[in-house]
Every structure is written in structure tokens, then in C-alpha cells.
Amino acid sequence: MGESRPVTLATYGHKILAQPGLAISAERMPPQERCWIDGIPVTSPARSIVFEMRHSPDVRESVRWLDLAMASDQVSLIEAAAYISTLNGWTGVGMAREALVLADENVWSPREVDLRLLWRIDLGLTELVCNRPVFDLDGRHIGTPDVLDLEAGVVGEYDGKLHLEGKRRAADISREGLFRAAGLEYVTMVSRDIGDPSGFLRRTLEARSRARRIPAPDRRWTIEPPRWWTPTHTVEQRRALNDVQRDRFLGKRAG
Image (cartoon, rainbow, N blue to C red; front, side, top):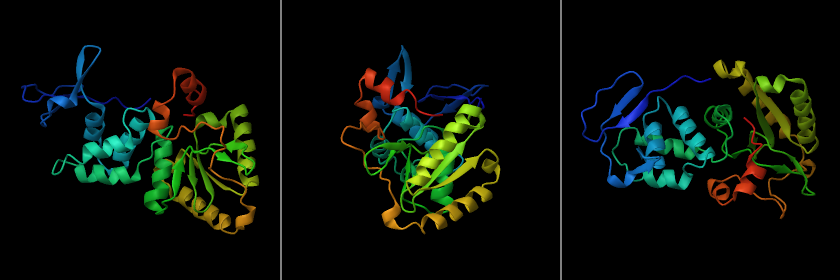
């Protein structure tokens, strides 16, 4: 389990003192940024998420807030950008703008954010997508990698403790074989890489070097879905699903 965090109260002029479990924000708030949930007044999703983005300790944490909010369809990239555009001069707005450029609407877990940002920030890779289904050239679904480097053709996966269990491990090995057979290289990030990512970054560069030696005609994969496939990699696409579709297409999203 993660650490507990204090709940931030938007006091808008009321004299409320901070206390254990509560943090206070006296930033101005227009009436339209307040809504009611189960009889409780709360700030709007866009304001709430951008507040955390602006007050994060660094840009990676700011991206994590936005990514995970978009993963639950609370806000879209367009909605976050529109709100941030109204905050000229506000605390942390520069970092929030930087986080927008690094964000992705389709992460499934916090560790995927960490993996992608290691590639994006530390290695400078830009053509990255999260949890985008990969197909062979006949339209068959090969798998859905945590992160895919489109430019080099490298799959990045985070393997937590669940991936060490017998059946899950066997499935992962089979899946890796399918990716490689299609002409993709494969690199895995594990828990020990979180504190010191140097080994993971080295393995990534090695995988990219191998991938670049694969002739273009031997790359038998695409992220262009067949006509029958229902895409769900954007907030807009997921919001358009009905309840049956959400259960069918989103119910098995990995953690």
C-alpha cells in the first residue's frame, strides 16, 4: 500500500487551521470550479488534478498525477491543457505545462509512468505509446506492451511480484516470444531498477541497438488496428463506451 496523504481543503477565505490529515489551500477559486458529489462540495476534476500537478515536488510526480487521473477518465489531456492555460502566473504552472508534454492518456499503473519517463527524460526518446495493442500484419493481436518505442521497435515491460508467479511468468515468456517473432526487441524493468535505473537504461540502449539491426521488411508488426477492433487508448474513446463495453474492453486492464 502507498503512503497516506493529507486531504487538501480549499478554504477560499475561511479561517481553518491545518491539522493532522488536513492541508489548507487559500488559493482563489471561481464558483464554477466547485461541484457537489454525494452532498459534499469538492473542487472540479481539472482544478483538483492540476493543483496536485502544480504542487508536486518534481515534474515526474506531476506527470504521474495527470497520467493516473486520465487513466480513470477524470480528465483528458485537452481538458487539463485548457485549464492550465488559464493559470498564467500561478504557483507551479510552468511545471504543469512541462508535465502536459510528457503525459499519456493510457497508462495502467504508476510503474508504467516511471518506465516511460526514464525513456522520455533520461534517454530523450519521444515516439512512445502506453498500452497500445500491437498486431501482426494479418491483423491478429500479438499483445499490449506497457510502453512501446515506435521509432526503434522496442517493447518495455515492468515486472512486479505478480509476474514471478508460475502461470503469469509462463504467459509473460510466451508473450515475449510473440513480440520477438514479430521483429520487436524486449526489455524488462524490475523493482530494483526503481532506486537505481542505470541497469535498465543500459539494457534499453542495448535493445535499441539490436532493434536497429532488424531490416524494415522483417518488422512484422503494427499498431494500426484492424477494422473490427474497438480502440480505447484515449479518454474520449473510453468515455464513449457503454457499461457492457467498459466491462468487456477495460475489465482486464493490468496493474
